[in-house]
Image (tube, rainbow, N blue to C red; front, side):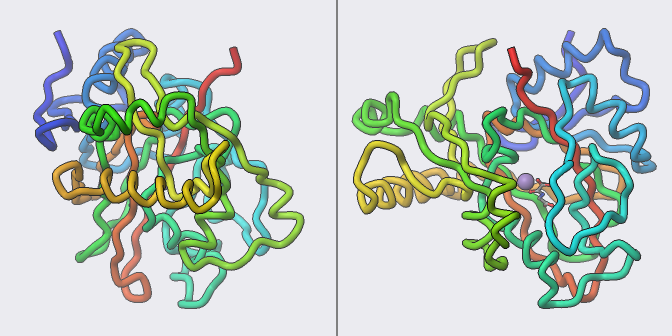
Length: 287
Ligand code: OGA
Ligand code: MN
């Protein structure tokens, strides 16, 4: 029997009705993974947000966790855990970042459609985002089912994409998103990674289009042609019918499969309200 849930969108997304991730037993995890294979996104409400330790403990059951060891200039940590990515608009002292702060500018790039950690050779698999403080307006997270997008592409396009790969670079999306140019040592710390444009879930064989604002070029075709193809794919993928818009409540945990979806943050008055969101991300294993 699958875990009790309702649907968030006609093609994907489940909301668990009766599951507390603090209490989930390792032997129930496979049910959650089955649900993720089917729905690609899973929302799990809690009355009280998970502590950082509970968040990490749960995420480790989904696979190896990516740890942030690479520092970005001018950043120190509000949350002292290498496993947790601070997606809030708060600085190390807990104050709202001022407009124009480099660190805020980098975070605002999350407003572009992307998938997490595609800029690493070992790709991100599941992300687990936990809501600690949500603003009274704005700040939804939007997600797209990239399996539905792939399914709906024309046969001609599907043929064209076979064996095509693209180059993903963290700094590309930061710059596109209005962020600062990287310092040379920052640039060196996150070199680009190459991945196929069409990927397949090995368990259910569903194919997915692997797009992200991190993509800076398509390999093997002329630059302008690559840019045109990317634009066409992005336009197709971001049609309204594919989008799930998730409105947060404090304590919600949203899990998404980065190999089956794209997502983005939506704006909110980030000089006025606090939005405290914390993320862990699992990655593929090395073998
Ligand atoms: C992320 C992300 C979107 C949001 O945490 O990876 O893109 O709405 N977040 O905060
Ligand atoms: Mn993200």
